[in-house]
Length: 80
Image (cartoon, rainbow, N blue to C red; front, side):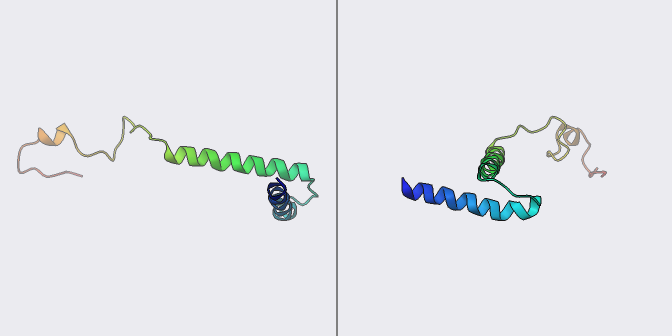
């Protein structure tokens, strides 16, 4: 258990060293713990979103051309 406590203390110390100059005020160890918790939560959500399967939008303009090109007479190319 001591190893985990040392790792947590190191993380808190590094968080204070990183954020205190940027915030321009002294941070308590509790402030640093909350910042760390919020950052972990933020990146966890980003990770979840990146792995989520998103449905294709109904008005997807990048979808392959559909029936309108099949109805066009042969010899007429795309008019874009």
